Length: 327
Image (cartoon, rainbow, N blue to C red; front, side, top):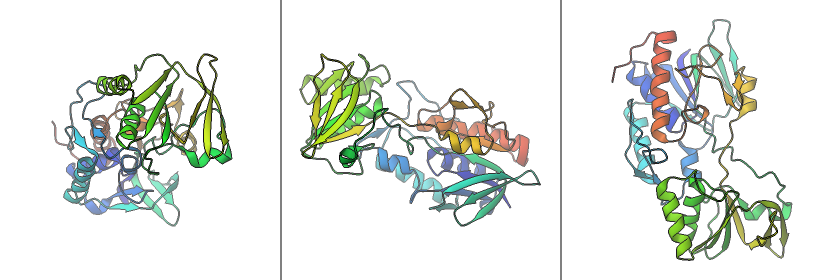
């Protein structure tokens, strides 16, 4: 039986494993399960190549509390740092392992079920992200337009195209910046009049692109529906004073959603849209923890690292009897 199984090999899951090893959990008593083909799948899939992975969160310093910490790094540098963490801590990460269920054992541990295997453990930590489940628009995407609609900028190479970006957060700004760098003509549609959800850097970058007429921004615009004709797609606006936009491709940056069905199936209770967790990130199911994007402390990689630290403290004191070094 494993002492600890971690579901998800993103920054939160890998830092959780590093904290466990630092607290004395043996390498053969620790397992990380990842449904993707590589660790940090969301970073690989959703981050543009030139995106800077920022250490702070919305302009606020994020202080590292645990074993892992990064400064501002490029996408490749961040992935290399996480590669090194796997090697340094001798982590057993198994890829292509999609978890279908977590069941309580009679001895108060858990059985974690994947497609072909069942792994028993004493404690289980869920560290799956939300970007793997991107939010979709409320209106339907016509079947003929689906090949033209994307939820990341890495799956399809877009160059010299008319591209509509939909959203108003940091990802929307970063997608627009990346698409302009690739020689595209970019229009950004956002339902609000101001970009309060962005960091100052991303607001300034987007404003500069607008001033140079490299990005057209449709503030206070709401898309009612999409239609396709002759290989092009048109976004029809709710507002009569905003013209419809015809484009070659659209990229939606609407954030991600918590996988509620999966969490509810394993018995986790919710308060509103967020699962309930203690200060140490334990759920109402004793021995089952949530960290990273699934917690109110989500937002940056360092905050994900810090949730791992706090969870490990609680796991050591409440379940495994391990010792975590004070910092």
